[in-house]
Image (cartoon, rainbow, N blue to C red):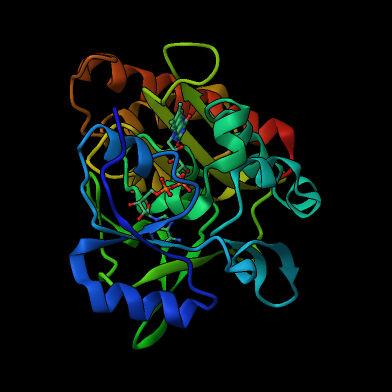
Length: 289
Ligand SMILES: Cc1cc2nc3c(=O)[nH]c(=O)nc-3n(C[C@H](O)[C@H](O)[C@H](O)COP(=O)(O)OP(=O)(O)OC[C@H]3O[C@@H](n4cnc5c(N)ncnc54)[C@H](O)[C@@H]3O)c2cc1C
């Protein structure tokens, strides 16, 4: 498995990177950590002729709190940057915990937030927790910047709504009233396995009443999806085991999984029921996001 030949560019600015992507069109691809792209090139699944590395774009490698805006995560931040971030450990521990459940240290040291989203793999671990926390992404292209809800990035397995010249530069987690959040995943091994099912939730609970809820499911549809009927069901309900169990049943009706080598559709559907209930209980009991 050798890498095929390719041309390599490492621009100094985001604008230049977008210009190169526009100039070369579909023959070019962004190279971030390379954990996915390089493997696909070796396996001849993808054959880009030109790689535009973003490794010099240090403005995309940051995790900071911006008052009035929220937590801004640069798209070049690695999974271990999320695990070790003081800002996230203080403000959104569930994101650090989700990143810690990914792959092994080597991949977590190289794989990036932008790559995890842009891959648009239904089983990716970061999109569900970002969606549950109402994240937006900032995207830059030759025509300028735009912002879109993270859930709107995905168009299908391996497909995004980004144009050829666009780069994801930031993920923004807005300030919010949620009191708890959590992501749990089921993989076929204890560590380093892709999600067979991933469930992320965020809840706002006051005086034991669920004021607001967001539920996002991974690996059980063509894209990460929000379980909107489950969210509506939860709003205004008093917390009880019965309510959380019912939420699990409703969520299991909101997924459209496929059967593949890792699990059958029926198994995934039932795991959504169980994991939604567990994720909600953990988010409520934790009492922090
Ligand atoms: C052994 C192994 C285990 C893994 N385990 C997990 C796991 O547990 N959970 C999980 O979710 N994933 C897992 N992955 C998949 C992968 O590591 C992650 O999805 C990672 O986040 C990809 O990021 P990257 O920087 O390496 O992307 P790259 O490989 O550099 O790029 C991936 C794709 O995204 C595009 N891209 C990258 N950055 C941007 C950007 N900023 N804007 C626009 N396009 C961009 C590239 O052009 C390419 O198409 C695993 C991979 C391996 C090899």
